[in-house]
Amino acid sequence: MNARDVPTLRPGWRLQWEQAQERYVLLYPEGMVQLNESAGAILSLVDGERDVAALIDELSRRYPEASSEELAQDVIDFCVDAMQQGWIRHV
Image (cartoon, rainbow, N blue to C red; front, side, top):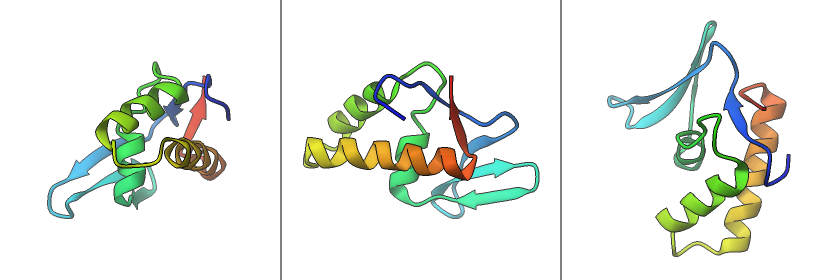
């Protein structure tokens, strides 16, 4: 996955904020995945229109204290892992 790839959730999967758990969860037909804060922040921006570079730019604005290089690598690493897990794909 590179900065120009546009990630989208896998068809049939949905991201939802769970107030009771105070976290995002990823719902799919067979169950759900509880996401940590970082994963929720990234996936909340995945809309099938923004590329990975746009995700990094937005997260850099939201978390200005984070190192730009580390944040960019973390987002790319997460997207690669999420794609391998089958949570997302790129269009």
